[in-house]
Image 1 (cartoon, rainbow, N blue to C red):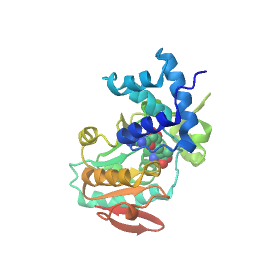
Image 2 (cartoon, helix red, strand yellow; image 1 turned 135 degrees about the vertical axis):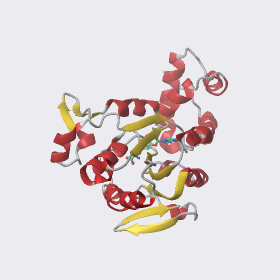
Image 3 (cartoon, rainbow, N blue to C red; image 1 turned 180 degrees about the horizontal axis):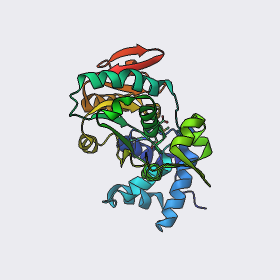
Image 4 (cartoon, helix red, strand yellow; image 1 turned 120 degrees about the horizontal axis):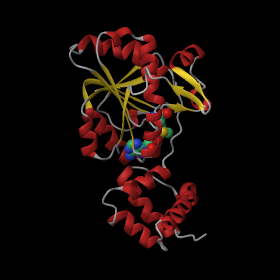
Length: 276
Ligand SMILES: C[S@@+](CC[C@H](N)C(=O)[O-])C[C@H]1O[C@@H](n2cnc3c(N)ncnc32)[C@H](O)[C@@H]1O
């Protein structure tokens, strides 16, 4: 098979990807995967050089189809239900009761999972809320999940999960809300549709503005793929998207104090939360 991507061109397309998505690719780690993708995609499009493929991607992609294909190919979507479970406990036991008290009951409490990958994170929020929090009977709680990868968003909307994906859900909760299926587990009708899933790029200011304001933003295990400048930009986007007093929660290996100083860090048990 042709090898269309030279190391020099890797730098060019790497810069383009970084500028558009914040994802920072390193030649040592990512060259082989990207080269393979470009060979196969160029062949599908009947293009015989990197130059032609790159032209199509940059100048002949009005609907954004090529960019979407590229994003779907390079993102790392690893996730599972109840990952870093203590954060969901803090959400239902500390954050939601506080927000419930100080938010007028006519207003929904809005939670964003950004990025949500195949949906395990926002559905884990919902499972914790319905299992542990009776606030849900008294007011509207909206959960929105976004990801740049349209493939994972399509999958999230089906509610179909593998055995690996559900392994950390306690058996009683699993049997209550899921049905056993040949492929693993199907999220039941009661919760299917309880998350508003959307394809969105965190660096696209217009798309982010359209989502509206939130009271809580979970952003776990995405910033690790970005460099310092992109992390800062994302942190300030979250700041703008939060209502006053709203919270951000990051992944266990991510620290807001290393990125920006506009949030107040609080520790609840072992979990760090960041308040606007
Ligand atoms: C490792 S998953 C994390 C999923 C989940 N938050 C968790 O912690 O289990 C990282 C996700 O970030 C998404 N992503 C990467 N860059 C993005 C961007 N610029 N905008 C939105 N999502 C992005 C990827 O598509 C991928 O699904």
